[in-house]
Structures are given as C-alpha cells and as structure tokens.
Length: 241
Image (cartoon, rainbow, N blue to C red; front, top):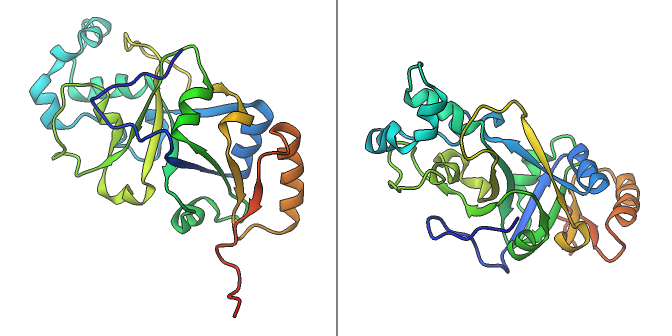
C-alpha cells in the first residue's frame, strides 16, 4: 500500500537525510530479514507517547471515536481507556533527521560500543517500503504536552513529544494497524523493505572495536550489496596537526 500524504502534519522533503541509529542485534535483524522493525506505540519507554492531552479530549470527547464507544459497550469510556486503545493500534519506526552524524545519538545507542546508523532519505522511505497497509511519514514536534496546538485529526498526538526529547529530532513512519481500534495483542510488526534501494550508506559507531568493521562490512555486503558504503565513524578520531 502507498505512502499517504496529508496536510495535517509536515513530511520533510524527499531529499532530507534521515539516520536510523540502532543496536547491533537490530541491525542484523534488518539486513538478514530485509525488514524494518515497527514498535507498537504503547511499548515505548516514554509513557506519554501518543497520549491525547486533556485539552484535546475535552474539546472532541468520546464522540470523536465512535468505534471506541462501540468496542467498549457496557464499560466506562474515559480518556484513559481511549488512549489505551489508540496506543495499541499504532506502530512506529523512528529516524533521526540530520545532515550530519549526531554525537548525542551515538552516545544514546552506542553505550556498549557497537551501534549502527543506517542512512536513508525521505524519498527512499516513501518508495521502498513494502507493506499491506497505508503508512504515513511525519516530522515529530516537541512541545509541552498540555499546550500543543489543537488539530481536528487523531494522528497529530502520534507526532508530538515533550521538550525533553527534542535532541532526537525525529521523523517517524507510522502505520495504523486497525482503524476500528479493536484491541490487538502483538507488540510489534516487521515491514519488508528493498534494502539496496532504501539504504544510502551505513556507519559503525566511533567507539566500536576495529575488528567489527570488517566483519559487519562483509555481512552488509552479503545482504545489501557491495555498492552501499560502510564506514566506521571518525567522530572521535585523534586530531591531526
């Protein structure tokens, strides 16, 4: 199914560089399976992910979610119960938007010394995801939760995070699994991708041991192709006078 364009939120231009920082195990999953990992929204450590603010809930109320009312017949339909259902019906794949490497992101994902960054573009994400569901790509906005601007669109809360996370400079691909908002039990989904066309380049964290470079490059060449550049970051190299 195709990428869905909407004016409700901002999708960066096709040329925008995006980086997916990940642990070694997530990288191996990506290239061996040729699948991107999408996490269910309620499984993120930040418990405010996708939460409708009190202001939005009071403005639109449960009338904005007739399917939720239908699925919760005989039960109390509160802001908390609606948030719980919605957060379990959306799956997200996160990217960092930047023209350059991010020291903060390496520090976040490379604490054990073997993080990987896959570099792509918004245009590649639009064209080389293979999913049976429509998907959206949006820039994340960082705002105090109870004061962000109201929008009459249920997807907007999926693209707002608190100011404390602003260093992530995130772009996310998100998929709504079940429009009727029935409860689902799976905690993640994997979406097939054309790796050779999705990936522009691959970086190994600057603190990774040198012996991993050759090993991971061979694995990458085997599954992605030799034409994809594979480089160890030089971010923390010694100064050359």
